[in-house]
Length: 585
Image (cartoon, rainbow, N blue to C red):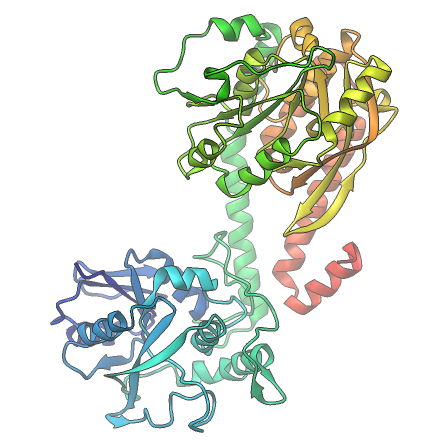
């Protein structure tokens, strides 16, 4: 069965579209057209022809079209073009299939006003035979297109397809010319002036990325900057490209700013509409809080979709009676890319007296298959739907047999001597918990180190602590004494549990040698209105000061709004200079 071909275009001339459609409608291969641009047609389109209205720049319109086609193979075309070869899609697909390789672009040949231009129009900048072949209306795999990173948002209207082609060559692929002809009718084209406006910018960008001393160098000097999902339909990302004529960019930015401010205002109104009800629910929660216990979880009936495994089901682990027993818990959902490193960091621990429990929240991305690969070395794993990470952690604690418990997130990993040092710190201090530092990683590099504080109690009770809960090893009897994680809190359940332990007389010890490596990101590192409200309700519950927290969140809000406005109104170069001046990056 032949795959579907998706034909995409950044389109602004509806009067030409049906001529293009008629030139491909006699093919046997299934196809669809996805056109994105500012001008909707005044006629009904065929079923396999979709139009999406957007005023963003041409390359962004193309990226929107690529994302919205359901086809396995994709190709772009200008909307002032028509195919001149009978059954062009069948011929393009047959040639693509004959190479049996995904790293390939099958290009059409170019005609202008009926004249064959393919002898010189398909070489990199010049018609020298030694130069690389460049595509026109090229057919390629959508999956390979995604692997290459898609369109770089720094292009405005042209040359982006040559950038894609050079990335294909750099990956070991190639561009192949077919015998299919595409004709551009300059009489129908109204975009020459528009393209000339962006030609110099895009050509200069392409040369800066791929040439050295005027010659092609198949090693891109900068990584691809893809379009983000945010406002992709409404705001042009990267250098400005205008469908709207030659109006000054400043006025267009004002127009966009008004739209953004109105959208922001609507979001605030929508999110605060039930603010009174939210406060009422929080107050009711604080008055009738029921802290779950280990016994509560042991009494809960087994979920009908539960899957279990691990060596504990077949044999009991032999414990060294002379050494404390430690339980490491990992909560995971849809983290197959990072979970292997997390598991291996546990299995490589030098301390021998460890049991490992993994609780999966019914992942759908292959995470469970990763867990099963280590089934003989994991003491117990459970996979079933749950109510979030706190619920899963409570479940794991109720099943734990260790004297000490450590929660290692599925994005984190530890050094081989971590547990041994933690146990030694417990034995020498008698503390209820020990904690260390967090090393934050981003894109494979260390971004920062979050140091723990020896005098943590002062910060804990200040209402604005710097407390590294992910680097914390806890005595199991603490959970038996004060209960498990309170499920009422979504963002600050760990802080609430530590506060509860402290008010019940729990003591902790900071150990600088305990390091947990973390990848930047996650729920706890994202601010939202609800997290801020929950935080202040927590401070109110424990009668902690709020001044420092209010000052920080006000500073954070001002910084975020200022940065957003600067990025909106300044040029990209000026914004980067300002950011380097403020942040030093």
